[in-house]
Length: 620
Image (cartoon, rainbow, N blue to C red; front, side, top):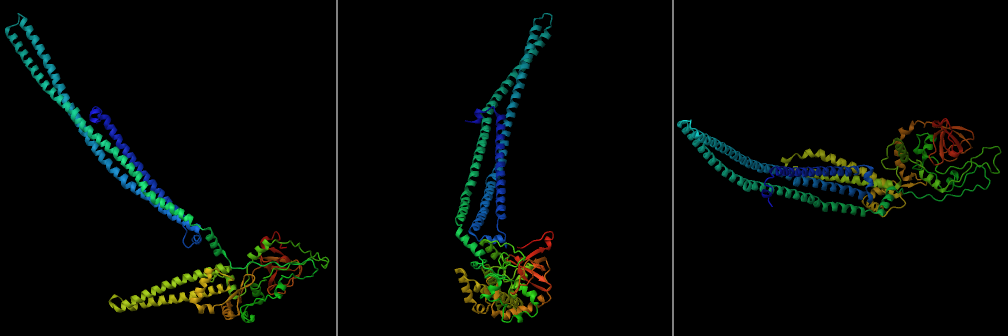
């Protein structure tokens, strides 16, 4: 099977076919190039996707990745980066092994094809020239033969005519002989050219063209083989990354299998555990027996009288701590009632006063509502530290000791802060050691530098270490204070506390011990009287000229209330007073009468807020 033999007369068709083959190759190169662009675009989109869902540094999302499910998701994002990298490898390998190589081969193929068809056209032009020479000699031989015949016929005519002279006859004979000689010469020339043409034609169709077509055939077969090898390379490039992609997928599966729902549940407990004890049983309030203006067993007056001591502010003498503050104004701020407010007086009892005020119906609240009320009620402030904490929260600044958090969460924040400070201290100590070593080197080799130039830096680092140590001791004291208050801790917390006590026994012994009051607020032990005195001097200017709270509305007393406990105020039925603080969910409303301020049960008054001037808002 040879194109030179089988397709000896298909020069033009072979030229078109080989050009079509080059076009196919260029089309395949374009296809691979677009595939590489798609791979790069896909890899870029995958990387952007993984980056989009990466947790932001120093954000709340970073804390969420403590959970195993979030860790698995983060591992998936990291594997997606590697997955995208493999698609970039596919693009690079296809570009280098296919696109570039085939582009170079196409240029070589075009040059080779051009040379072959140039030789073919040259051979065609040569055979055409030979054919033209043959035709020319043939036409000349034909013309000479015709001229010789005409000369011979003219001679015979002259020779037969008796009227023609002998000289004319001789001239005609000579002319005929010349024409015959010219015809013979043309015949010989034509014969020679014909033999030459036949030889050239044989060489053209049996040697030159077959050789050229054979080379073109080999070139075309190499092109076909090359495009097949490129397709194999195309598949092999994909196959090479399949194991790595499989590993990425295996890692994703492994990350998914590492999800531990029990561990995540424990982390939720550690993240949100408050450390408070659940509320106790609600005491039974007996309304069946006649009573007049008495309060139930769990009311404010009885609870104070049945063994619950009144809260004192940090020391033995309250007067020593508060000599510079108006009693009614500050004490109402610091000591709002902690017990549930007494119910309004019952009007349906036999001993009720005739024509007296009708008390609202007492609906039994479900236990869940009382529990929610207990959990949402805000603890009142009982000491300077709590006062400072409350003021900081009102101003929008988080307290330094995290006292706005529940005990368990506060302990974790303090422990985290202590760990951070210890790391900073260690870093500064390493820097100090490095400067000290450098100074020793300078002392031994003065040509390397001046040792005195490091004194300032060494002093600065030492001061930083001292500041960090003082800061750490402060947070360690708060941490010990919280750990001493918590009723129970996990084994890890006990171990951390034990390590802390072993490393800092003096600090633990000297730190202030707090205790938790029944309503969730914090009170100071008498051992902190000196600390409270110091704080009192710090807050002297802050509270001495404090402006009274603005009124946010008015209220009308529905019943008479005798404020016998600290922080409360007595009101008479029908009296109108100013409201300076709404009910925060604990059942008490803060009111003002002239310069006197205090709390009354919300159910004893009807409140009209300024923002609701068109309609009264009643707490009954």
